[in-house]
Length: 473
Ligand code: LRH
Image (cartoon, rainbow, N blue to C red):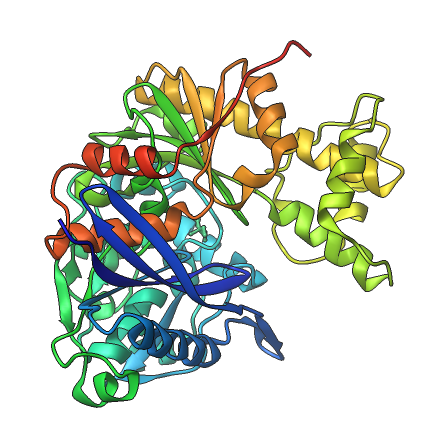
């Protein structure tokens, strides 16, 4: 059968891309037609996403996509979770905040005074992260919240600008904390109890459903067919990434490793046990109603923020060279807790690592190579621990660990995760998020059919992962 084309807009915390996917029964080809930086902007009121710049770059990329593949009928949009814009009558009220902005402490206290985390977990199934949407909303000035008539998560906002239709895609909406864990419906009772406006989340839409055809002026500006539409996909980037993990879900854990390392298993029902609560695991909505039982590990952020610290000090850092020298470090490296909240906000990572080591009576790293090695070892340990814990909590007999995303290119990280877990690591595909975005569109538009299992088989056939066998350390 001939392969048809779809377009994926994939926004990550450091860069965005537009990809044309050609999909057929035995075809899964991806062509990147645009890549652009995502540079957050700090203003006097905090750290924001440059959302108009991102929309401009995404639409320029889409124009290029329609130029190279005029037969595209569907667009899917994914991004990082939790962040949103407030709107009134379709008009955006200020630029979305970045989840790494530190304003949410007051919102956390306000919410937990009404409902302790344990009670929230029973309802929404989410791990505690200080930037979960409900804490961000609780940090908004109440006059602003009451003036707004809706909040749209980032992919929903872009979809709204393209189609004029405002919906909350369910996988991403599950990260707001405002959906019930058991059926992923809006928890209106919780919204009322938190004093948030009832209509703050628009009606939900599920992956595979059509959001709407492009507005005529948008279609004209993009050079698109007039019937081209935005299709809802797993618009939470991690949900799309998990779609494209070439795994056997009943025997594997996955790590979607980019800025964050999202480490977990896929299960049929949310796990709301006291063990899951204590381990701070989350139950996020997956495509086809699956549940992503996972834990947020700090991820490559710690490494890239350390590199930025050195660059600010005037050093020129080449990442592959740095990682080669890290691999050659022969002394045992300090393993620190990457999940410590001190590593969340932008800033001087080496100094924070020193501080952590001093508090724990551990010799801190000395050279840049040692810091890099220590970060990789600490990430590998946190990944191994979370992957095994996910298996225990979810009742999955984890026999392999899949690493997808940018981190799958970091061979030292893959090998050390395998070593520390005592399990084989299967690395790749690197572009899992965009693949998952493309695959769900391809299924919705009839280019392929079948369950997530058959989509994953297509990934395994076309993007064979690379194997890292555990070594005794
Ligand atoms: C990864 C991610 C993650 C969320 C975080 C805010 O990009 O979507 O799943 O927890 O960003």
